[in-house]
Structure formats: structure tokens, C-alpha cells
Image (cartoon, rainbow, N blue to C red; front, side, top):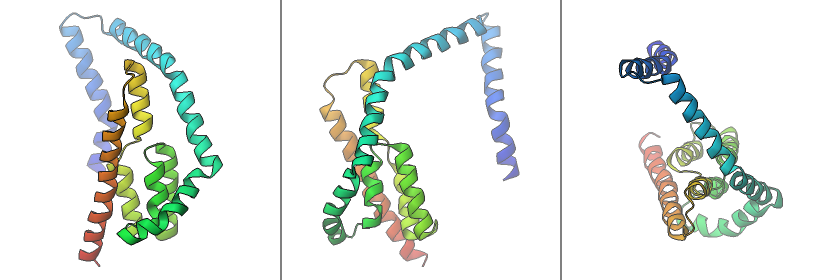
Length: 179
């Protein structure tokens, strides 16, 4: 473990050194290229600010209004019949919208049921196997000026659903084998 921790502290300076070495060897103005990239990055951030404000407003409105809890309440009887643990339903609903919200819900699940519990494992795998789909697509389509993204949303949300179902299935199989 010491080796991995020590390596992680030195890997970025190593890569930066390689980039600088190659740039100097090829007679490039490394610092000027860095500044050009930083300037372009700032321009992208400025173009994305309205989209980000809209997304953050949507996320906060959904959380503050109790909409996620209401949907969870409505879907709980259905998911119980399918074998899906209703305790992770709020996480499955919030993950495509908000990464930080999903981390908060996953943390609550782990505090309540334990990090090594079946539900704690399901929560961890859901967070790792899915994406903040709506946020990511909104940012990329906004930057690329894509106006027709309905099919993209459907495909990405289907992939999230597959990740969520796989998390439940694999964690159930693993919990049976190691209990």
C-alpha cells in the first residue's frame, strides 16, 4: 500500500516532466502552449455557465420540492415486487441528475446499513457504475451546440438503468456467495 500511495504522489510531476521534455526536445514553446490551453479552458467554462446554473437550479428544485421522495413513495410497491431494494431507489433516481446528491444519498445508506452490507455494496456499485447522465449530456451538448439530443438521453439513461440493475444483481449474487 505504501508503494501505491508513494507512486500516486509522484505520477503527475512525472507526466508533466515528460510533457515538458518532449516539448523542449521538439522545440515547442511549452509555457505558451499551456497558456493557450488555459485561455481556451476559461472560454469553455464561460460558455457553460448558463447551462450549469440551469442544471443546478433544476437539481435543487427537485430536492427541495420533495419530488424525489414522492417518486420513491410511488415506485416503492413496484420495485419491491421485482426484488429491487427500495432503500436504494432514491439513489437510483438522483444519480443521473446529481453526483454530489448521489454521494450524499449513498453515504446515508452506508451509515444506516453499513458499508459492508448488501445495501451498502449496492449503493457503492451504483455510484461507480453509473454517470450523472443529465448533467454530463447537458454540458457536452451545450458546448457542441447539439439541439437534437432526445435519443442520446434515452440511450444514456438506458445505460444507467443497466448499471443499476447489474449492481443489484451482482451484489445479490456476491452476498449469497460470501454469507
